[in-house]
Image (cartoon, rainbow, N blue to C red; front, side, top):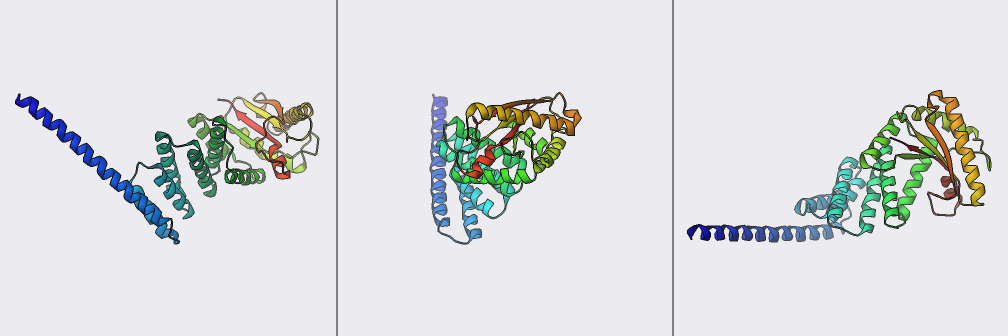
Length: 291
């Protein structure tokens, strides 16, 4: 009888401790919410960041607290810490089943942070993850994410990924189970399958990176913009992919037997707009790397 009474006391004590802990945790999160509200009204970034970090320590389970601290860390050019904060925010947002729009926002900021820190392989992965998430949830990438992605694509046009960067990007994509692919906008003469002089120079750099990727099979997929007839654009994209393969092998004979050309025409535009810039960015050659 005494043993039963002791067990009951133990259970009641545990429940009381749990209840007390929950109350304290809620009070801490309420204090964190007040700190964030206060921080939003502060102009100096350093003071605002201090409040966000304090709020994060008070309520570490809240995805939005980690997200806000990530924004302030990124604005302070503390990119490594911001990367971790956004990853923590994403983990908690998934656990808490926050709306897809919120998770999309976090993914976009993670890609932005890596882009601003000039970590091109991580940024490439970040934009790809955000794009895949948007397609899965039948969403459109926010305009600010598309703008950043365009900036990166244009940078890659001028300076393609090096062999080391390509290997790092492919390794990260495979680790996350994301399709391993990279786009290059090889410049062609208008309505022809012959690259311009600038396009030929691009292929020299691309060949160097590809032959060091240690990938046995690489699909080379041509894409056009959305103007014109579908059948014509598909044929043009196939011819361009075949020409790219031939030129790459000519530059790097070791790639022979590893490149497989095909064309998608206008069926898979990367950007939904109708501006000359959108058309230019949609005219691309995609390299999909097999395992």
